[in-house]
Image 1 (cartoon, rainbow, N blue to C red):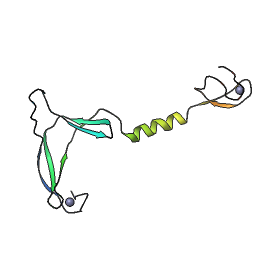
Image 2: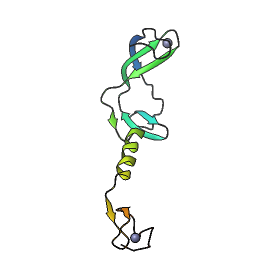
Image 3: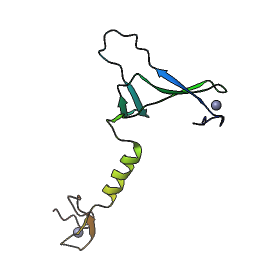
Image 4: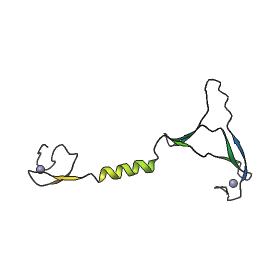
Length: 110
Ligand SMILES: [Zn+2]
Ligand SMILES: [Zn+2]
């Protein structure tokens, strides 16, 4: 794999996460997008890549469990909300999203 910063080939090795807390039964690797926890893996040893140029260590985790949604997904949800079915106000005929409790044109209550 090439380093994303400098483009040099990264060295492959063993990536180890050291856990110093005795209180936890297991350690886990978590991937956050902003504040949202999206994926978790309970692997603590995996393939690691090291760029000698930049001093970057990257761990490669397979089989991570997705526990949340990325912002791409929320974006899709928003799109779905935008395409809600429409209905016509029986009073004035204005086309409205189906979740409108009241017609904004004439005030008709559904
Ligand atoms: Zn690099
Ligand atoms: Zn109306």
